[in-house]
Length: 293
Image (cartoon, rainbow, N blue to C red):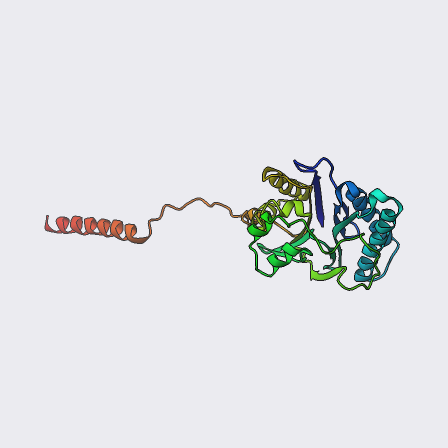
């Protein structure tokens, strides 16, 4: 797999409360979006990355168990830090964590960051938005454009850190599994990207992948900034070893390279019929004249 990640504060925020973590060797990819602003969203995001990295590194359990344990550990560490100081109370984050092993992706998700799967020219949003506006969009009650412009689009009803959690708590961690083909790609991103550019724009940008995942991630972030950049923006692109963008697939492959051969000067089709008919007529006419003379 090849991966690339880019994050930016955007045009209106003084601080970048987004964080990410990439471990290509072990197939672990994480995007975190801090919640709470002055109450410590940046610290919450940093704490989540640290706790998840430590928890997953210390475990050899099945992927789903590792994901649940890591996110729960992050949640409780953030909660404890928030209780220690009054100004930090209320800090939390939302996140999407993916572990890829043996062609299978196990995804742990809380909040309104997103994971998209891109394969064979199509893009599918795998995660649900744990927000009032996101629920309505997923249900088809709001169009994508209406959801992007909705005044309550930043509200979430699930987060990591606002209260103590156990691994088995219902309606906390959304777990998903999907096949991750060698010719597929995944995009993990914060809502600062998808609140600014549509899924069609995201897909078209990813489809221009030519082997440089960081360049595609950077282009996604730049497009979000050009569209307004109202929030922090993070994009992590993970490309399978055989993933190629739509433009790349139109190029001739080395195994089927076409060789231009010299054209033989042979007339074919209707033109040939007329030409050869005229020549035959001239030969017959010459033969008749010779016979009469």
